[in-house]
Amino acid sequence: MGLGAGGRGAVEPSVVAGRQLSVGFGRCGQPFPGGCGDRYVDRVAGASAYVRYWPGTYEATFELLGATRSIVELDNDRDRPFAWNAEWVRAFPEQRLAVALRVEGSEELEDEPGLQYGIAATWRIGRQVSLTLEYLHGEFEGDLTTNDDDQAYDHVDRFGGLLSVEF
Image (cartoon, rainbow, N blue to C red; front, top):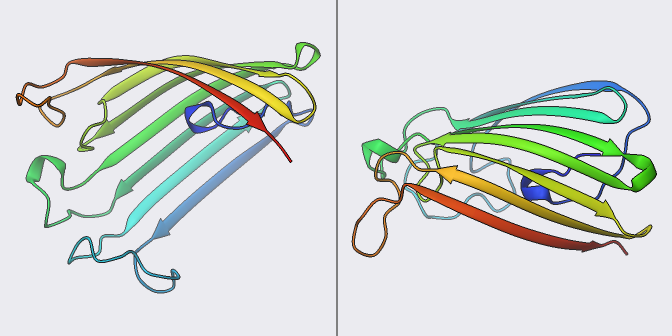
């Protein structure tokens, strides 16, 4: 049912209520096929958690993701990235429509807002086609994101649209 990250995905209203909890831990290299490339000398593990609750036509999700220790090649203000995301979705199955409210945050992620929130709507046009429109407002913290004159950005407004066709 959910719109997923960035409103990506089709509206699939759930008719069954449920709960889900996922916890993950990973690191580059083995057993991941192909490893992680040679971008950094030191490999840093990551940890994540995901909670989903969907009582019928509503859905709530919360997700955390972060590095378990510092990445030595990066500056101290961006060496241990962390992000979270919370989303609430309400489906209207008769109208083939879903509306999502999202708030998300991050620390030490270059070029990303410290806090971002917005709304998205997905309309299931036909059996295999959906259209998602989204607005997000982000607020930057510190000087992790600067323009060409090294002036820090204070906010960003993002509008997006996605036409999904299943085949």
